[in-house]
Image (cartoon, rainbow, N blue to C red; front, side, top):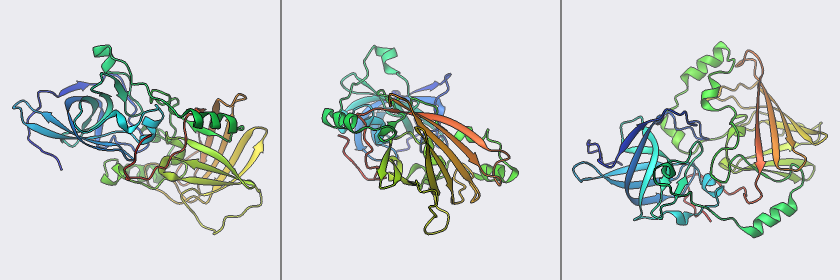
Length: 354
């Protein structure tokens, strides 16, 4: 897959990062790329795949002997670019670019890209955890995107309390709030001996992690892509862009799971406490994916929109006696950005960003 001529390219610069970065993206890449070591390359784009879970670029970079080395570059999900109002037109085959990213742990000419300097001289932050980089070198500007004004106006008109699209991503592609149940955070949880054993067996460098994965609760609630609350009859459906997942919240307190049995989303029953939506979830499927979860796990969630509808505060209490010595409470928030929609995730299917 890669041209592995073992020479350090003259156009490649390694940097030791003294500032911690977020390595816990929705599909964690920390097992493959080192967020503490940065690499900068300059070359010509030979291929672009706009797809989830990671955008993929191929880049020809000259080494010290002038030979071209093919670099494989992965980056964030399409929703990160859409949140900045950007489209597929920002980059095309033949463009000469500079890219800053996390160095490969596998000794390959590959990286997880954070920032890209386009031929126009504009910079784009490609994923969460990125901060402006090239402007500090060249006084260039961030590329400004645009949004569909008709869709934005319709979202403003239709928004009603909790029933709107919520986002954790700012207009510059930066995460607006600390994620929950992130990879590094899991090691600080009060895990039982069984929970610790399962966690220690987790292989963060398993190849399948870079592809499509099945999402489960409560891990799904830590993802950075938009979600939407929709009233469906008497029930509430929570739609997620991440993995095209949906959760049904049964508002009938006497509702019973049908069919009876555990699932990735579990069985959720909700009620209102004034303007706060309270959800209790049981019947979760056992999981050893990063966060240990047993079939005895229970979740208690509270979603509280601000009076002006600009912010959605979130609290989750995770109880799981086989895996945790005590319940764990985590908090987070989403923000209303009416210009953002919940788009199709369509994992590993090439898409146009428009």
